[in-house]
Image (cartoon, rainbow, N blue to C red):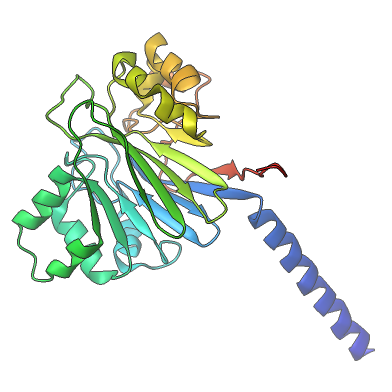
Length: 279
């Protein structure tokens, strides 16, 4: 009798493992940390966008203290991070001191950031300058050609789109990142991009060459016809979730049909793309 009971439990264990593995193999996850900070996970590949910042300006949510401590320590679920992306140097997106500490602690993590962010880190003269061996700098002039970087399990394409208000002096990068060796999930983090198609149109072929499964635009793209047209027709994304949402969510956004992040810890499922037999 004990033998049959043992077989029953083994069956249940294996069965649930198969179910969980199957479910895990069908989607990636995007988890909101705060403001424009997001963690995207696809299988064993994990990246962070704008995770370490020190200012909310009494307007935007900060990463909760306990969550921030886990990120810095690399405690689950923030363990095994492959790369960190920084969109631009503003204080509600980037803290150079914290990034230095993070890179010194996590010696296999790569940093993808605009030159202004790397320069700010260098200006602090960290003792361990080897962290810059893992810092991938994006130095791109206004209107410059897209930049492509790749590793074994991450492909990165970036263009410089001016900061909202058409502030060209800020190196705001729009990162399109494909996670996983099988190219099954592509996400786009837009930083504080300005809402004007005059900045996006010159990169028509760039947007067309790879579809984005899930984009993360600043929420103000939802509030104008120009912004919605960029999301729906220009950047070639299947769906979008707004970020940079104030603590006091604007009423027009709350009552709209648009999807957005506002509560640290909430997440979205991103279905994996399956390749056609001829691909």
